Length: 167
Image 1 (cartoon, rainbow, N blue to C red):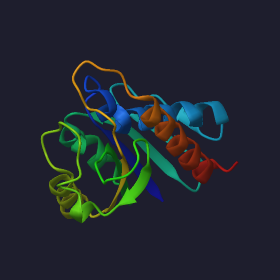
Image 2 (tube, helix red, strand yellow; image 1 turned 90 degrees about the vertical axis):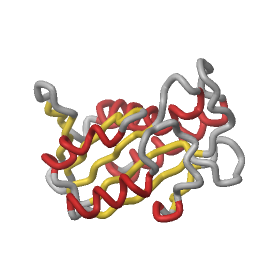
Image 3 (cartoon, helix red, strand yellow; image 1 turned 180 degrees about the vertical axis):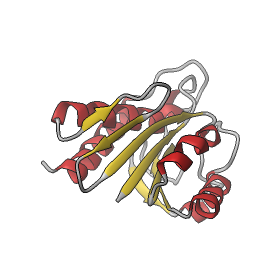
Image 4 (cartoon, rainbow, N blue to C red; image 1 turned 60 degrees about the vertical axis):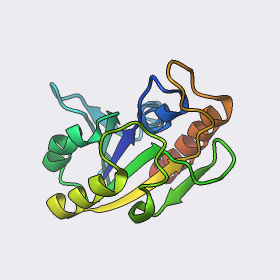
């Protein structure tokens, strides 16, 4: 299976950085666990392999659509979008969301709504798409991530890491 994680969000806007931070921290988690051997390719994102699963971890930032080239080269079976999303929960709550209904949920400042990006990925790459949302507290410019969202990011990374490589 080929699985890609695409972290979405603007790191200058507080909790909007949650998706990017999940992907960055997941990469660090996997490096510490030594279950994967990272291939550092010139000008390429990390591809992590363990024989049964190949992972591509991308920090898409505020313009995740700019990463369709690396995704196309990777040819994923699944793309997991990770983004700050408003779904009327406590700040820091992490939830699998229906990407088809995500237009009104996005807290991010990215250019394309998640539904447009998802449709493009499905049609162009023939992959499946899922969305992990993290409820923000505040997405104000030039503020750090809030404590509840930092905890949500850590929870998401621990759960994803354990799911990918075991406890």
